[in-house]
Length: 326
Image (cartoon, rainbow, N blue to C red; front, top):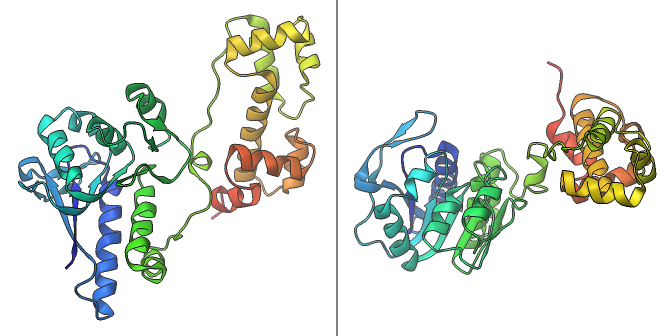
C-alpha cells in the first residue's frame, strides 16, 4: 500500500515549507510507479481545519481537504511553518488534532517554525530540535523544555519526530526520508530532478544574516567596537584595545564582556569573519589575500575559523554565495 502523508495547511503558511516536501514525496511516487512499483510510494494529502483553502503568506491559495476525522494511522504528518504559525498554534482544534495524529503516525516532521507547532503539541519536550535560524531564539525562550539548535539543516529530534530548519530544508529532510524508505538511488534521482544536492554541505550558519552584538553603553567600549569594525585587519590585541579604552587589559576584558556580551577576542573574530564573508561574495581576490586583509594572517587560519563559525570552508562559501557579473 502507498504510505499516507498528511501535510497540514493553515492560513499564512510558507509556500515552500508545504510544497517542497509535497513535491519530493509525490516525485518519488511517480518515479517508483515508472519503475514498475505502483504499490510503493506515498499517498499525499494537503489538509486543513474544516477543509478551508490554504492561503500562503504570499497570497497563493491552495485547495485542501478537511483534516481526517480519525487522526490516523498515518505514515507521516508534515507540519510546515510560516507567518501564520502563531495563529495556528493557538487553534486548539488544530493542536489537538496534531497530538492525536502524532500518537497514530510512524513519524512527524516539522519545517521552519512549524517546529513551534510541534512544540505546542508537546512533541519536542526534552528533545533536540532545529528551526529557521531567525526563529531559534524565540522558540528557545518560549519552549524551554526543547533543546533548540539553530545550526543543523535538519535533525532527528526523537524516534518519531524530525525537525527541519526552514523553507528549502524541508526538501532536504523529505529527500532523507525517501532515502530511508526506498534507498539512495530513488532519493538521488528525485534530488537530481529537483536540481538539488541529496545532502547539501554545511549547516544554517552559512545562510544566516550577520549577528552583531549590541553597542556598549560606555563610550570607550563603543569606540573600541567602531575601531574593530572600521579596520578588521588591524592588530586588535587585548593590550592594544585596552590602551585605546584607557583601561588595564584585565579591567577592559571584564567591562567589554559585560557591555557587549562576548569577550574582545571573540568579537574581533566575529567582525573579521563577516568582513571576509563579504569579500568572498563581492571580490575575486584569493583566500590568501582576503585572509591577510581581514586580519587572519594565513589562509589556513581563516579556513579553520570559517569551518568553526560558518560551517563550511571559504572556497565552499564562495562557490555558493559569490556574486557573478551578468
